[in-house]
Length: 331
Image 1 (tube, one colour):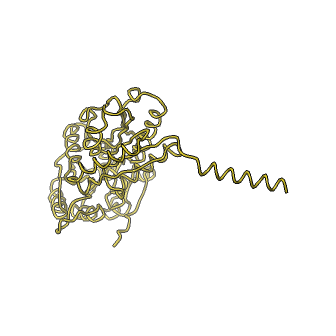
Image 2 (cartoon, rainbow, N blue to C red):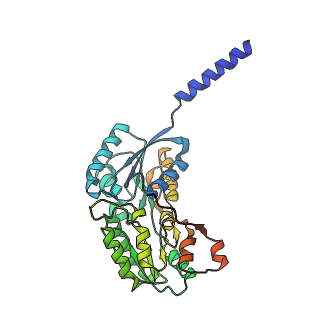
Image 3 (cartoon, one colour):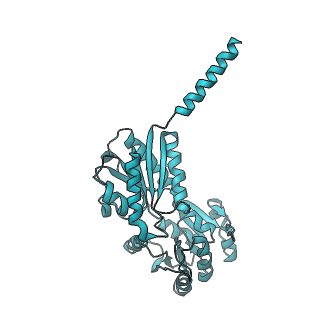
């Protein structure tokens, strides 16, 4: 009887301790884009892997992929949430969160450590590093992707690039022209559609001048009624209109029918940012945590697209790659 009572008391104490436990740190994560964007979901996976039970994470989504004009207002809402939460650390993902939120409201203005991830611009564009800001840059594995495409189809000599018109697209355009001399194929054109009709027309035009088309996100291009569309509504049609080998920069574009890529991952961005912030919250001065960039790349091939193009790469190339099939579209 005494043993049973002691066991019941221990159980009760365990429940009380469990219910009263809280994570050591409170973290605010401000995402530039909407919650459903695959890149955002990848970053979130990486963050939660790094921070685990060490942080109580609060997410805020600025939705600037679909509504860039609403970005400044969303940044003000993010600031109100920051002021209400008084977090121990902040993580900000992608460029719009830097220009609209961190630079005007947090950089060199608060003591809270801020770690960015997914940034395409050079850090100097935002005045980084700052007294309270560091992070990880996002860089495409373009040289590796082009070389991989040439392994799949050796006669690729020219390529184009298509992405929805946006401030980030302009950053990528500058990077492409700056690094053009490093590429194993000749860069021909950078296309920035705003509508699905434009995207399909541009892909059709590029077919005549390019052997390969690199397809980045087209999320947010509009239909004839002006409604923003998802990548699932646009990328398969662009791939079909181009009708030649295509390459991507993210897993999800390959799953939508793009042929191949050496992909960067949001998981690496989120995990690294989370690890950097944890160091800062544990007392390491931000200036002692240097800005870094992504280095991990994964080779991926859409086998259905490969078969449709009648490509027959060597077994060695296939063995060292992740093979996927086109994800069925939801109606």
